[in-house]
Image 1 (spheres, one colour):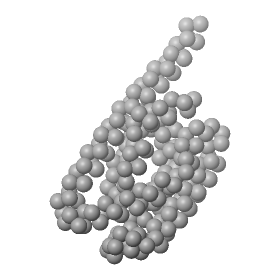
Image 2: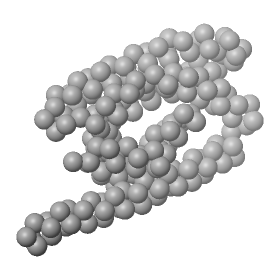
Image 3: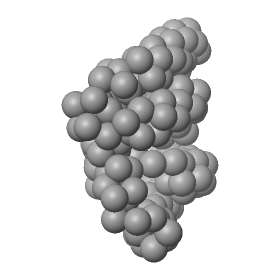
Image 4: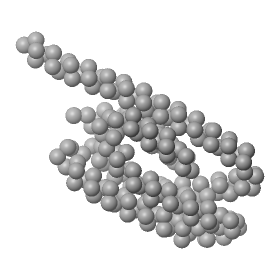
Length: 191
């Protein structure tokens, strides 16, 4: 009987250790990401004129508005999927997310002249067209990112997040890097 009790306790210890490590990686990722954003913003402010810096800010505002629909909650749905249905759902989510990323990239490029006209900044159009590619590039990794979250593999997620900080993002992206939200997501889906 003591071995029956020892096995669940060993599983709990393993789960506890994984949870603590995951929390440490999540907070490390958040702090590291914020530090990289601060450094990159300071570098941009130093390299760009105030007008150019404002232009980048306008472009990021526009891209952030479109970013609200870039996932539609499909990645979090993978986190709560059972292992039996995970492969099929992951394939579907990947295809849909990449398709949506391509559509949003094309929409951004098509709307770039309209946004440039609205803000009376013709040099905004090419900047938006290039920033729009970010939707497609991030969509390529969104499914893998969600699968790493499901497996409580925050080390891989941290590497991906810190690499992704180099790409300009709006303030809306902080919701994905919020460590308290991520650790809360994993509690409900643990096997």
